[in-house]
Image (cartoon, rainbow, N blue to C red; front, side, top):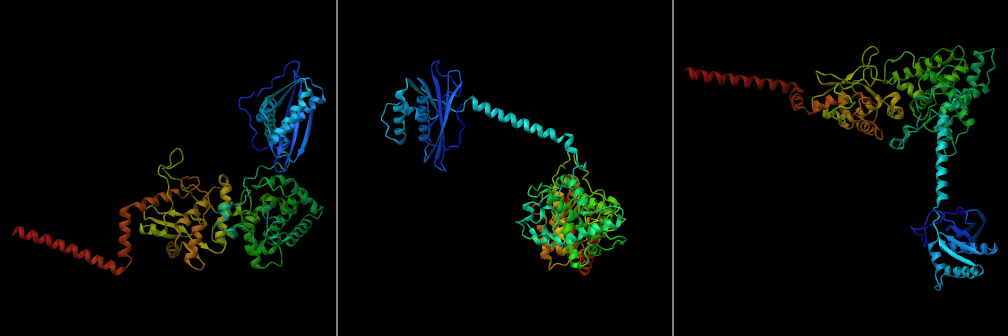
Length: 618
């Protein structure tokens, strides 16, 4: 068997025949077969030769290797390998020898009687001189893609198939279910995609506190100070102190927290789009413990006998006494609004359970109350859709649970295949709809009505009025909407795409300065930014990089509304009536003048009719 190549040679003048036999054929019964081969490392100008001797039955007799330096020509390396084979045959006193090589040009040189004055020819001449001592010598070309290598490749493929089969079996093995026994996390915390982040990188990065493994301080981190390690350690100490006060008869130390969170490590890692191989188990568990305690100290009252805070900023200040209101608001934004800056909610529940906060329900209830109060103050929603949230994936998902339309509309013309016969176009701008007779009206939100959040957009079928809840735009509006869309992009089957559909609607309806001006006058948009042009630019960039199918009714709850508005926009009678109202009925004096002209026209017609009748009768 030919020695495996030590180095991978590059193409060179060496030529191989495509018609040579690829199946090993034994030499004559009274002969032996000596196979030689070589490999060249061009980068380091070195080569290696290998020789194998087999008898006519294929039994191994001998082998040799010989490294060489300063060799960069593959054909010279093959010639040196053949000379090594001849020297080995002489050493073994072999009378009748068949030499084999896969270098066709070398075999031709050996079988030629012409004088060769090339570099290879010098080695060839030396080989021929050494062969004089052998009784019978022949040189044969053979390809190295023989059955042995084919069998080797087949065996590697079999090993690969067996390995994959074993891994698939391991997925269903009982050992794979051992541990926390928690079902897979339904909400995946994913890294924000580059095509979205590049639009506005600052909307996804924390400014005050880093939470979770994506923002874990690493050597390459641009802002290692964001970790707030001192405040997090204070929060851990506060949690342990609260646990001792709530459980006076039990020993509560930090090792209890570490042990319990270590059992959750695998489940937590499965909740991320990355497994973070650069983080050890110690680093990962430490991060979960410190981040979880920090969040609980800000959102839940850990002190024994403390009363619940009524406002979001006050609760945020409860954990660290030195925190200012501005700092508290920055913490709220970082831990609630950012898609990457999250840890799974069940980690918070476990830490709360160890701290003695009356189990899972207390943590969920307290944080859910905080989230609802926060979203009410930002005027994104007015009522909780569920009395007790059912296992939110993380804090951003908890906010998302309050932003769902009361009654998402599904097109009645949807076919059995799930697609409307007429594809949906993009939304028209607000001014285009206005010129087509569509009126915009602010829709007030109420806890008991059909308008509970900013997503509850409604089109009045009779009057053609589009009722839109007021969007109060502040410095954090764009950040929250972008991160909510990122949550939906990675978890569409779990959380839906309602926020994305709303953002697409607003970004296309209010994409110009005139659109924002019109919607501001109608009370649909309220903002405190510099001017309408700035707001329009933000709306135009809001959905860049977002993947969204407007024709899918499961993704676009406003699909039927868009279809109705498009039909109204393309209706010429509707456009003419709208033009008439804008031109004449917006000004009362023009309306009076139009009415007087109409009366005068009617009187003139009546007079003409009577004149014709009197002339005919007379």
